[in-house]
Image (cartoon, rainbow, N blue to C red; front, top):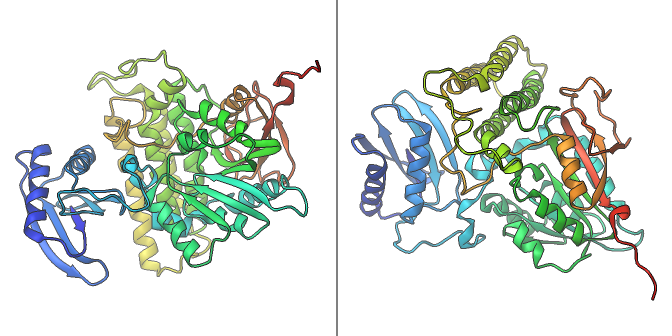
Length: 481
């Protein structure tokens, strides 16, 4: 394990870390290897002599948090070496009193996004996601379209990430309230505000649902999310959407730019596993063909998060399913993952045959070759992990219940939830390819051509922009006395 922290009390910190790790992994021998890196400050590397499981590493992280040795400011990343599984952590403290990230309140120990994705990589490379620029343009057009001409509007952005869309809104005639629960992401926004890159924006680092409940009704011309709606817990999504409906003005809009899975039976875990692999596999393959290196890694991280929450998603959308209902008997073979394992193998095969058409990250040829080869190996290893899993998808993370996850759904399921929240919607398909629907002629995107979304109908998976308004037909009529 590599621990990064500047100016720590070396012996005190080592002793606390050793104690915490031995509580979780008794009998595991490890050595501290010490060196200095001027870019990072002092580093401690803890080298395990044998391989340990990712679940063990997650449990170590939770133990370190419980002992107030770690906060989530710096994020977590995993890497597998010859001698073991290493985790890279920052945000350690040798103080007996836990001092949280100044951007975060105590309840934000469960920061979501930086649990499974590198925030700096996300900030630098997410804009390369197929369909991203088309989505951002349509989201921006529909958001500004809700503001009366010549007026200064008020916009709420939920799940602002690192502020890519926040910047676009702030440059126009609107004031922005940007809310972001993840401290690492929020730090990027704060930095951009101080640097003048983001204007007319108030940053709120809180959980969106309780915060919105404190706001006055009809406060905003538009509420907007971009690539963040699918991080909200399915159990809380209906309540969340009702709050959005309450917060938008009479003629206001909710605009969600997001990724949606191809049509499938949402209560069938095997179909959900396959739908996730089909969608994310398409994005990975498109990015791979374009010669991108970092984006496929980000997309694979999102897929893994979704596979780990397969059972959780189904239970939250269909509570009648019990925790052990989908548990597979050890050694019996995981039928839930059968098609998904096959799809991953086919994806790895196509990636091996793919020839990059460009070099957008300006890497040397040897680096590109090594990175692509290593990525394909990770996909193959994911196949093996799914074969060994005793649940649909992957074994659930030990962070379950403490953090969010990747909870993408179908257009049909989302439209049904909007209807329950008193909203009606139209959709704009932004590509890059339609996944899993023979009815839609959507390849290449629809641009600004809207499609009326009905709760009983489904549409292809891909990047969509959903524009929702209050459903006037469902509002009670007012009579004069």
